[in-house]
Length: 96
Figure 1 (cartoon, rainbow, N blue to C red):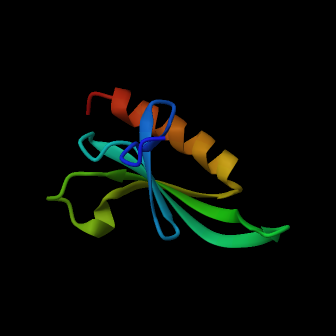
Figure 2 (spheres, rainbow, N blue to C red):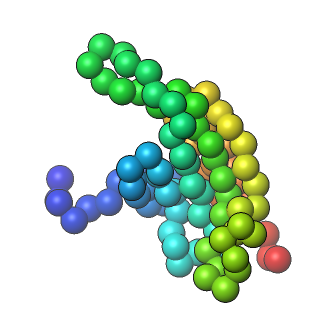
Figure 3 (cartoon, helix red, strand yellow):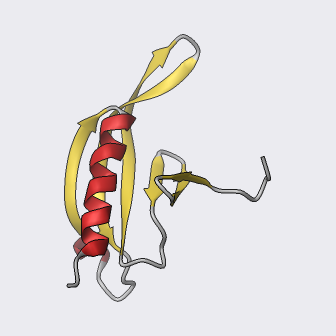
């Protein structure tokens, strides 16, 4: 794998910064932010347990408190990515 290659999910980039995972392109109007709140040990691996999913507007002129459009908490990364990808697709498809 090329060291400059980015991970992606359903054709959109995934970027991790600590316990935050950003899904989508910052050039689009919206991105998904996944915040890992709790983890559990499975053998020697930390696995995400509780995750906050947020649909966020990327407009830099909007105050940070108003950038969050939708928010939810899910159990596990799979459910969080699933709802996040649906929210992002719908938000990017709307003509607002």
